[in-house]
Image 1 (cartoon, one colour):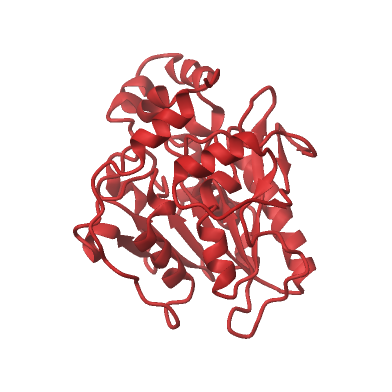
Image 2 (cartoon, one colour):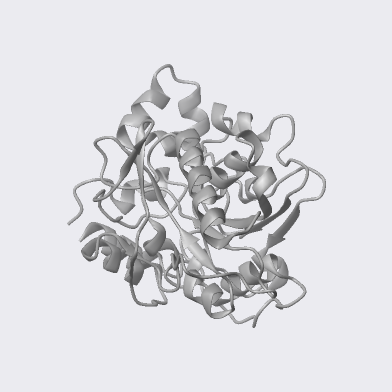
Length: 326
């Protein structure tokens, strides 16, 4: 049974993945948190709960197809893709299906586990500003290893904000061609109104940070961090921005807060493309249609939207609750 944050609490307060994460072995200090480059490939799995279970018992696992530093980008896919994971999670638990799909499609794929706050057990818990700097250092490492000038970034949940902070605030636009935000808390979540209420109570956000994590609190609607990354605009010149959201996101409420609001950003909503697909936040990176849409966003001229099939509301959530609590 988990001894830290349970899914029951996280469904109320989390904006990102609920899976357990790889341990800190081999992590290198960077500010108030640490980062780790996983190198032992794990299996391809098809559900978030399966990936979370494997990550829990195989600490330091990398998703299949990722972090091959001998990979050289092809003329069809000249830019490496770096995947950025969500809160209380790691790259294997969030990308055990996406990384192998992209690698099999011909991309060089890389991942980093970042933001392990001091004294915490999970990655993606530390200050997002520090995580963004860690990601930026990894971008430099990938560019040097592959001999490329630019990369594409795909961020899931918190990872979308980490990647966008790097681009918008840390000068990353010079080195990034495409940014794709999947279930991105671009304008944060209200936690079904609880976050907005807490913001009015003196000391409530500090208490929430003790109960959850600094990174999670930074993803509340109206947070200082989100104001930083969205001001004066939520995009910067030179980068192609795409968001992929769902109208039935269990934790980003209102769900429209996924979309970017500056001109030039492309905002997809799954139900507008496939009305019978009711995949939610936690299932986004394991839903076949969403995975195909991510690939389309990276290379729209080569890949279509994928097959539209029915997906039941709440798919994957019971399994995640069981995995994370027992």
